[in-house]
Image (cartoon, rainbow over all chains, first blue to last red; front, side):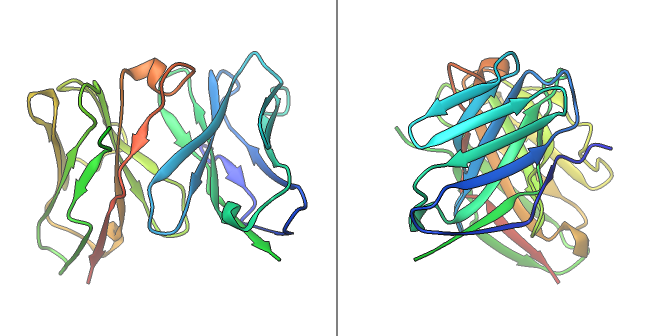
Amino acid sequence: GEDVEQSLFLSVREGDSSVINCTYTDSSSTYLYWYKQEPGAGLQLLTYIFSNMDMKQDQRLTVLLNKKDKHLSLRIADTQTGDSAIYFCAELQNTDKLIFGTGTRLQVFP
Amino acid sequence: EAGVAQSPRYKIIEKRQSVAFWCNPISGHATLYWYQQILGQGPKLLIQFQNNGVVDDSQLPKDRFSAERLKGVDSTLKIQPAKLEDSAVYLCASSLDQVAGWGASTEAFFGQGTRLTVV
């Protein structure tokens, strides 16, 4: 099917690492993205990875890509309460269509 | 730099009525997107414009939805007539160009969205 799948919820303690997982659908997707959505706000691009890479680090964020399994993950180090939001992965398919995942709600508690 | 502007922020209408949403992209952005985000789901692409031409509208329910991008700048999305299942947040986004907009050199910027409730 066309669904980009994510687990619905993740709860972590402040200071711990968070790992959000995503399984995408199109093995020929060129770019994969992570977006953050806070309540009442639009989508904010956090980071992206090109399909010929398997890892990208950007400050507290680490993206891992397993093309064989079509699996993408986002690790947030030292998670803060301000990281509480919904996180969407998205794939740019080779038709230039951008497909979003179902979203993972991250809750950070003190 | 001003962001993507959308109006109205909220709209409540009865089923079978018509509604229109407006989007003003960031100045100079060639690509404009409309997404529908139903509560609890990820955004779904409805239509994608490059300047004033349609690039992709494969998921736009054309029997009731229409969109245009006047002079390659502002865009309107219309629903006529609305159904209960159209209740969602409608997001507009823009980027400098189509491919690079989603990739390394530029990003797509989203507006705050219009929350539509059909009763």
